[in-house]
Image 1 (tube, rainbow, N blue to C red):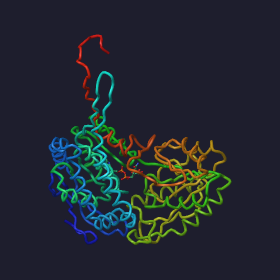
Image 2: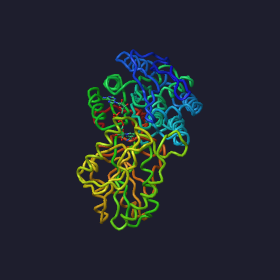
Image 3: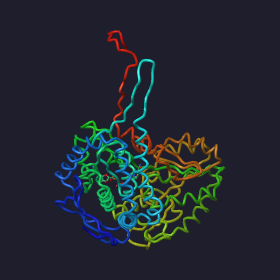
Image 4: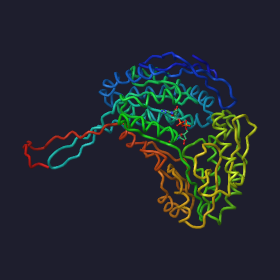
Length: 487
Ligand code: NAD
């Protein structure tokens, strides 16, 4: 056990309903001030093997409970998450550097809903019937089996529950491998599952780094599904491992999403929304990070956005007034600085920011780079830090071409007269795009990326399609006459 911000949590794995000590441990530090927060077990081959066996053993009984039988377990799980709200907020903020206010008002309620919403939605899965003159097709959504769930450090609680909700509700058993840079809220989440008395083996957790622990998990042939959110390079490794065993993967990856400001946009509103892109120090996959602004409103937009950005409060994410917190890790800070240095070397100009911030070692000022070309690294690659780029365009055709001109296709934002903006949004090749808004999400709506931003969609029925094996049980309406002439 360890104590983090006054809350005690287990440093062990959680397998088959029991806390299992690690064979070795690694250290976890806070991005806020570098403080040593805890040590956490590092998963071995034996731990991964036992977790998968335990999930396999638990699967038949959990699957056969049906959605109605699983509902009370999952409602209790959500309620136990709610009971741990203070601990989850304070621990995840210390561990991942996420704003405490956002955790309290956004992430915790959403995490609870991620569990209950899918638990209730799963009840509807049992009722799909297709009637034809010859037969009744009872379409079943059967749980696939044992699922591996792997997430990054930028939103551990939200992303883990977003995957666990549909996976567990549809009758699968799961193994999570929490992100090694921010594993602590997962320990509290599993404590909530334990208190909710989920049957042993239904939900397991093996801590550890991507390699070896994550790789051991995703290369196991007993898995039925792998649900992954993270970087493109890890997705390729997971995809190769999964291909060996023909295990279907859902891959939610990075983005370099366009934020388009048309000539007829409400520039004030666009600029105010633009400043929101620095939330979580832009360690947010869906943030608009490439500003494409019509030349006639370019200077006005820059002046307005600059005034909003200069008012941002940067500092300790645990303070109520803070709006931008730290980067997660010294390696992430080096990565961000490297992108900025190379961009400047190629001729980029700093409109604002471009330096470390004195709030602490891992704080970087919200930055905007102009004078960039479409094929520059800084335009093409995801920085995953508070460094945005801005480009000018003259026509709608040019805006669309620039918007679509990277390998990514996750999201986008488009400000302009409503119909005009919608027409442009329709032509941007991404999994989602917000018109005159940002960040509106719904659990029933699809979420995911095109091109290198991912494979598959999460949310609503799309999550169930992934976590279930769809089966057509065909019952003939008339006595069946066997015939070789039949289609
Ligand atoms: P990452 O790919 O390095 O790590 C993600 C997770 O994968 C971690 O838990 C890690 O331990 C694990 N992992 C690493 N190697 C592995 C392997 N070989 N086998 C199995 N697991 C392995 O990503 P990151 O740096 O933690 O996260 C940042 C990335 O995540 C960014 O690209 C960001 O855009 C993306 N992201 C995408 C979404 C989305 O919904 N599309 C949401 C959040 C973050």
